[in-house]
Image (cartoon, rainbow, N blue to C red; front, side, top):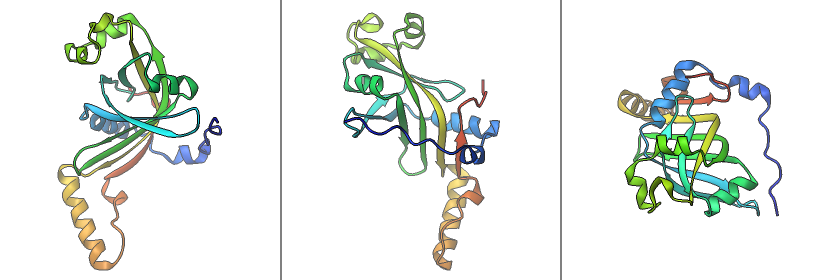
Length: 188
């Protein structure tokens, strides 16, 4: 049973998302701090699946590259439904989510460009392994919660203030959280 078509976000909601170049660049900088992510796909039955993946590279437009075996379940799921999500989290201070469309590629030049010897653990025949392919996730939107450095101090202050007043922390006011429109953001 296939899941119903993805719900499309109304254009006025997308327009309300942050498209400021500095915010997109900040999301890119945060994303580069991670070497692994959870790649979330949909099965043909409409179930959601997530698995940890080594991030091969993050482009300036926040496109994320992974290596995969062509016979893996995630490849079949992407063939059926290319809408995916990438989720990253460190211990307690940084969280992000990227929604986008995945494409499967066997581009030899790109594989050569992105290959590192450490990937041989998963692909014993190296970059010439016939099972090796690329997953490129072109982002459409991202969201982050950044409690690193001074933001952590501001967040703890807002949290304590909210606790004392019986309200919620004003995290948007302290620039800790942002929703970012990435499709066509034009960051290079």
